[in-house]
Image 1 (cartoon, rainbow, N blue to C red):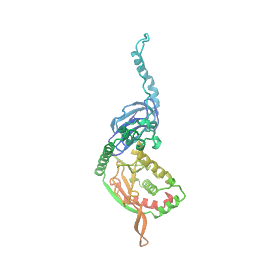
Image 2: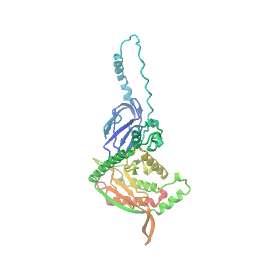
Image 3: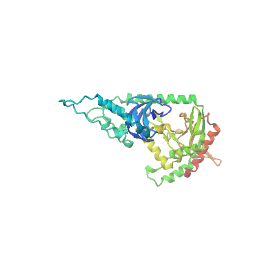
Image 4: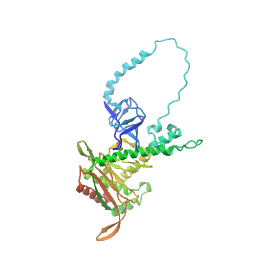
Length: 398
């Protein structure tokens, strides 16, 4: 017998609200199956199960807000379930004992026919928190809406006011409260991180001339939807460097640092309206650039639709945050516990670099490493950033 509990979906999560069960007692589940949807400050997360077996019972009700570690359900192995099956017979006998003895059939007044229950929203895939809030304000049943998000998920754009009634004007306060709560959770987690983790920072500027030339050549014959972005090259270089420098890839727990062989690279994605999440791309160092580019697009789309999985939220071993086209040269970040490092990159842009004794304008990007001094030091940090630099000088090998 195993207990399925509320998982930790990030350092800033203290509790989650159960909004949907996708299984019922008696259902068979396998490792990786999505069994529930939980709402946190950062959106609706699909919760996966990590044990094979049969759902014995559901211990949490819809609408409950439960702390991390609280019991949600019990799952028995198939062998245990088969052995326990006869035990259910006494319950049936009790039910039969409560029934009256045979008697003349009375004349009964027919009860009103109940409307059949509506099918679960989007075949169990649910809706984003913003869509749920909007539907509640408009008095719309989500079961009547066809979702346009990934996998049929209902997103905010799918929820529209009835044509005969004006749209309410009360959405802003609710949305503002949601963002304020998210900011509160992020602030608490980052304050704890800075207080408990001895941060140190190392910065390095990388010449992107070779990477940009290679990228232009590769993209020349591809349609827009298949082109690679510079962000994919930067992420792949970080993932490969993490695979070779174990001190920056893993988790720090009560017993100290535990490095991991697999690189699950968290990607910081900004939410519309404010806030940030950093779900993981699993085995990022082993993906081809095309596969990594596809994973980035998929992850970003699902973040914006409010549909992520628990494994993506709690398995990151290192986080990367890119400032993209913002024009900002660099940023020093705060480590996401229990990770021990965070890599940020500024916007790729022309910079004055010295080449062969002359100052020239070259496309470049500045990386900043925030690392845990309990695990590594500045010398190792410098070597880690140099490894990223070397990888980007040979983009064809990424």
